[in-house]
Length: 125
Image (cartoon, rainbow, N blue to C red; front, side, top):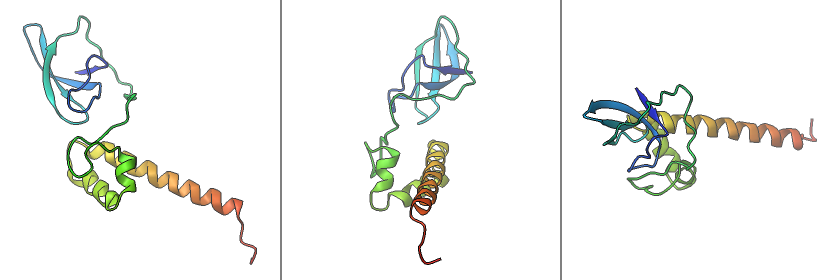
């Protein structure tokens, strides 16, 4: 069951969780983004959401060479793109988030190239 917007993850600050266990008025939740688990008081009313979670705070790495950096900040640093590509393939916890960022950044870069080409047509043709 999804439990979104009830608590913020102590590790990454996200508010999207899956309930993985329930006992005596408490639930054990797992963060959908970093995989951290914690026990908390069960909500009065269970919140079920099928809508994508929009985070108010941009994701930041909590570990590794890019600790404290956002995906875009890591991408702009030396070896950042290669690291993100590796994460998208090998990191079970962050795979989807990083792959989505990479997909968006490629589309954005392609749009920029098309816009620049339209604004500056070649005079030699």
